[in-house]
Image 1 (cartoon, one colour):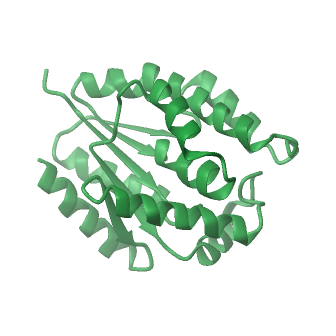
Image 2 (cartoon, helix red, strand yellow; image 1 turned 180 degrees about the horizontal axis):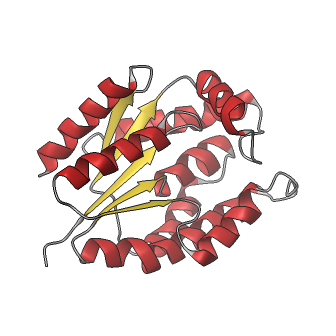
Image 3 (cartoon, helix red, strand yellow; image 1 turned 45 degrees about the vertical axis):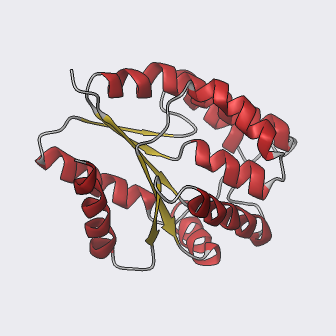
Length: 206
């Protein structure tokens, strides 16, 4: 069977990932492709348990290294149980966040050594790299305010704005390092404009 496609969405919380993921799912379905939606941390029963530990606002004692390892543990289970099998069976996997988030949040935001993040996640992802990643680029002050007003704030979202700016800078650096894979999308545009641009990139892949 023809290998599927692994698509990821990245960006600060409130950047519009959820909306665009749903629209891309609908677009791929019109092309007759079977789509699997997932998220990180999460995506499997075990990974969702780890997600609850990471994002619970009361767990303020979690140190940056522990946080990074928890994300990687959730990711390892997610890759083995969901992503690899689906892609190998010709399905389109669209995931809200992946390993780039660890570089941006734990590397850029928390200051964890990037080599440590790379070494741990190299084991976790087992060679599974996205075919394309969409970075929804928007000022973190706008996106975080949007997210909190919409759903409230988890442990990560409760961090001060300086943290979210460091995360944003981390994403910008990644987009410069990997321009062939990471496509930067102006998330201040209309929902329709953003969706159209994403669909154009997807059409190029096919």
